[in-house]
Image 1 (cartoon, rainbow over the protein chains, first blue to last red):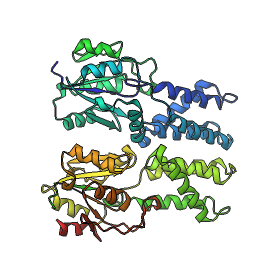
Image 2: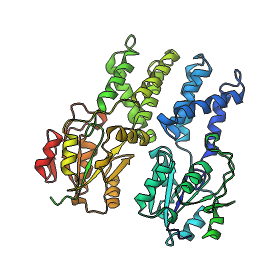
Image 3: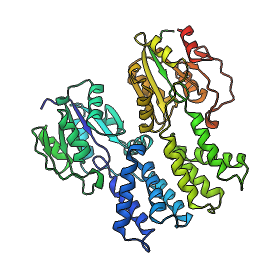
Image 4: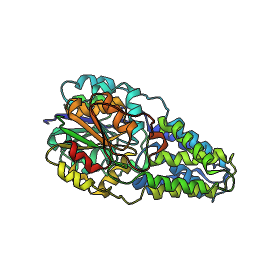
Length: 227
Length: 227
């Protein structure tokens, strides 16, 4: 490996994210517990989120809007307006969650800083990701911050071009096989999968990956052994 | 002027934006026309938007959420749920509006391309601004696209650092005195104000600007005379 740039996904790679969404979702499910089974509400919410991804993109604001839309649809517009108010409030709380750094992150960033150009590459709402970065106090480790509307092959190609490196000088570390690993391998980069114990249904894939540029880690500090 | 980089605001500088928001707002006001005077609804909506700016940032998704919040508050939670559904629908339509380039924009971009590094610097929802840029077919003119969560002095300082130039080598062109002109002048850059016939209340300022690096234009093509 002749890696020059190491890029880190942020949500559930550098800091805790998905558990906060799950807590909010669970409180959303509770609003309908007298009418509909949880798995039905969960399925309908996921359907709305995926249908809206092209318009809303990733992030909390789109998630709030999709919860409201789902609440209207599954109740056939019979829920009290207080439920809509509650959803708006849940969204605002989600936007103000503390930032909890995942174990080993500061250690690995300290170890790699100065040896490689470090990049943070994340998707989601622009302002929200900036807020989390600021609260995390990790900004000082990064040469470049890239907040992306999506993580497809063409998005990584643009990033690599912007960084002025070749694809095989790029290593991406993240918890999503779909977003952090597969598109990077497909354009000739290196990728490390560091799983997180919870993954959003839309980010999960079934495939087993075998690729010369792919590395499976258990924890983020395992990356140090690869370099 | 020894300008190297010319940055263009996008909404209401390169393409039409505010009139679409106004149309949506007007339809929002109509939902309450039997209960409240339009100026009351307008004032309450603006208040909600400004209160939420710190959490939601700029852009359509935050605007939709603020319309829903306002509808709940001013009706004291008495409106039918169909109104919430209508607001969600209005938001989705706003996210799919055509992109109408403002007169003179293609001419000036063509004239300046190759002579200066051209940058697009805009705030709003990440995905939505990318959508508009793609639809506009203007991407080919720009060396760099910067979608910013805000346009304060520190945001422009970061951009100028990223572009690796000095502040007085930077010229910003835009329709907002508050966002495109004042912060740029304050950090030592040059700024041209090209007014648009409608401005969002939160972007308007009363001050008259007199500054050696400030230029008032009537139309975007007037910028050519300054260079």
